[in-house]
Structure formats: structure tokens, C-alpha cells
Image 1 (spheres, one colour):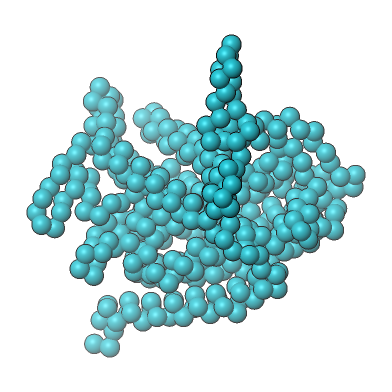
Image 2 (cartoon, rainbow, N blue to C red):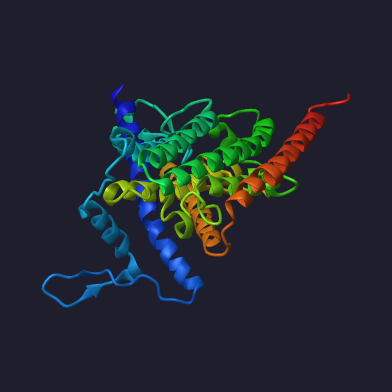
Length: 382
């Protein structure tokens, strides 16, 4: 139907714009946060001058991200002399595209009723309601792992196709590291699947709207705190961020698997990394921080345990849910960047040993304990 196409086109434009915006802003956040932690001013040279005046708008270095984008677009695209041209050209897109696609199954708000939001269009929408999620797929969590696995192929393609020993070593490192930590991520999420009984992300979020333990929100981080730590650690390693940046390792491999890339092709690799920070923030928010939920909030407003009710219009509820999701997502992104500037880099053998000898056993223990607790609550041994 035309109404459905319009709504989902808006959802897609919002998702792409939001992720691109996050990718741009996070480049600035990383620079300024690093500057604050190092007691420096940070990037502040790029500016926009108001025409016919000498007034320069610096805005705390916000224009540096724009300047970097322009630089990537106009730089000469150097290519190695001997390389596989097809794989070399495809690899950046194999890394970049799945990162955007992952957000398609993440719910970023509750139920949207366009007729209530825009009364003049109520007759046209005829009572249709839409969950604020681009693709309503029951197996949403499985789709996320399927798409994230494609980025492994892109990194390895880039390393192999460049015909450079540093790139090849970076590609091999990327493949083995990403596979190792994706396994840990999958095992940590299994605990949530046992608790919520579904792999549908929207259903998981809705089940996190209640309260547990006498007043705590029923968020995944409350029910699975150990899994939350393991998941976030593995996700940072999956994104190849410090202290897990051995596939790039500037001091060892120049730039790792994208050493031979320049101009916008290199920009795609770097931009994908920052967008993936946002995706990790969105996924962690969905699985462990209640998604778009606030404690005591429902589709009509807030209902508190002591009987107080705060009614809200449908537009206010939708806006609150979207902003709640974005704020939680931004906080998780900022925490990832904080870790970027506080921890040293591991050796490569330590990175893999950490995954297989430390995190994997802990994830298995967490899964077994969760399974036993869920089984006992469901009437085991009765």
C-alpha cells in the first residue's frame, strides 16, 4: 500500500541520516574526548567564515569532520601496481554496506500511529499503526549476526586483493579476530534468548518494560550483567578498536588490511568503523538497556507504582521514545570511545588467547548458569 511505502521510506531515511550523522559526530567526539582526557584543546583549526565578514565559526572543532569528508572526496585515488581489481574495488562496500543494513532490524521506537500524529491524514491512513522498525523480522537477532559476518569477508578481501604483505597480514588478523569474538558475542546473547524466549528484537524490548527485584527495570543488564560486560567487550573487539586494533596496528602493519587504499575507499573503511560504534551502541541499548523504554512508561504516558498517572499525547510519547533510544545509544558510544583512550594495545597472540582461553569459557559458564536458573524457575525438579 502507498501508506506503508511512505512510512517505511521515512524510517529508512531517518535510519540512514541518523547513522551518517552519528558517524560524522563520533569522529569529532573521539578527537575532543581524547583532548579532554589528555588536557589538550583538540581539533579547532577548521572553520566556516561568514561571507563579507571576518567572523570565523569554529564551534569547538565541529567542522573538522566536514573537512575530512571533503578531503577524502577530492584526494587522488592511488591503486597498487599489482592487485585484483575486482576484489579491491568491492571490499570497501562489503565492509560498509552490512553495517548500515544491520540497523534495519533494530527497533528505535514504539508503536507509531500516523493518524494520531497528523490528524489531517487520519482518513488516509485509516487507523494503520506501525512499529518503529524498518524490517519486522522474527529472527532479527540472527539477521544481525548474518550481516556482521559479511564484514569479515570484506576485511579479508581487502587484505588479499591489495597484493601487499602488510595488507595480507592485516586481513588474516582481521578474519581470525572477528570470527573469534563473534562466537563470544553469540554465546552471550544466548542467555537473553533463554530468558525472553525469542530472537525478535522488538519482543525483547517490550519484555524489558516491566520491573524486577522490587524496583529495578527489567533490562537485560539487570538480568544478565555478566553477559552485558562480555558482549560489549567482544563487540569492541569485533569492531577492531583499541585495545583490539591489531588488524590495523599502525606501528606494525602501517594501516593493516587497508594499507593500499586511499581517497574515498579508505574513507569507507574508516567511516564504517565509526558507524559500527553507533550500531554497537544501538544493539547494546536494545538488548541490555531496555531499548526505547523508560521505567513506568507506556503508550499513553507514565504509570507509577504508587498510582500516579502522567498522560501524554501520542506525539510526545513517540518523541520521548526516539530521544530515549538516541540518548542511551550516544552514552554507549561515548563509553566505547572512552575505552579507546584509556587502555593499551594487546599483542596479537594475547588478543586471540583472551578470546578463546578467557572470554569463551566465561560465556559458556554464564550460559549454563542462566539455563539452570531459567529451568528452575519454569518448574524444574518438580
